[in-house]
Image (cartoon, rainbow, N blue to C red; front, side, top):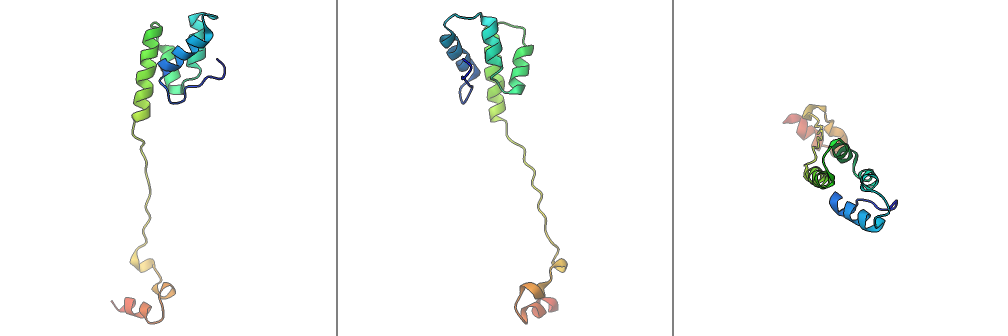
Length: 104
């Protein structure tokens, strides 16, 4: 049981596999604790706060993790642009070309 991880499966699938491996050697409360410890922190907090039975905890964990996996990531990218007046055309252009830019 100690080597089992969530991976790409649903939390309920992990619990079913842990239950199968345990083969009744531990009570369900301990099994739930071991299972919850393998969940992402946000999901774990919600499951632990849920006072309902095992099947409800499994359903909540599945739903929360599914929503979390499909939540779009917010990305902010700063784009810096230089004003044409701040570019020294004479250093990046060949002889005579810089002069043409300055005339326009």
